[in-house]
Length: 242
Image 1 (cartoon, helix red, strand yellow):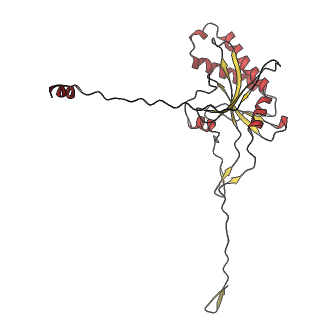
Image 2: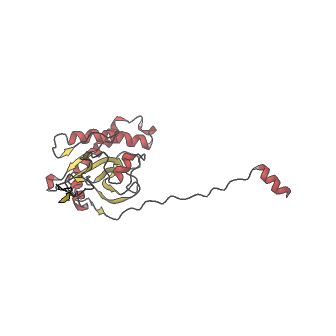
Image 3: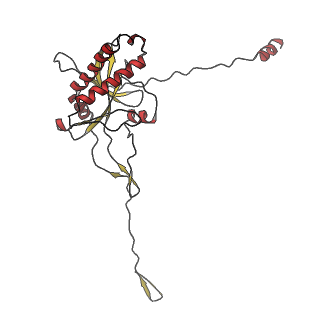
């Protein structure tokens, strides 16, 4: 209490603990859990990509020879999207979030195998290093960097923090003539030019090997070219006169 001029005032102090953000719950999944969820759906994704290649072989017999690799990848992607949506149409553990700037993703729940979590997957063509080719947009960078691709919102002025599900590419490597997939893989990007891990899918055959490779693929360092400016003709003449 504080007494002043025979009047008594009570001063009340409130100590506020200001959080950095409000956690909406959820725990970050381990690599083993992420891989187990992806593995649970491998048969369906292998079937989806296989059907896409069958479509490409049967529906474009007279024009596929003029398609560029980029066009082929785009056609195969669209056909795979069609088949994946049909395969998982009645599966309550698989969802299709609204497209964000045209990006098609598949949400895979771990509940069927007892894992409290989910994986966000996209369909991609893979190169020989198991990496994808993308136009470097903010959305693509967020996916590759394992960051949220949307605004979480605020509550009482503080950002809402929700654990982002692991981002995984489920893609293929085409054979030489683009008639079938040499393999279907799940890969976890670690930035735009590196991987955290990759593993091969199978179609359910017991004789196929499906190793998980956990060694990160390091990004390729760009080579720096030195540019030497050419002297102008006048400078060259003056130099010769001197």
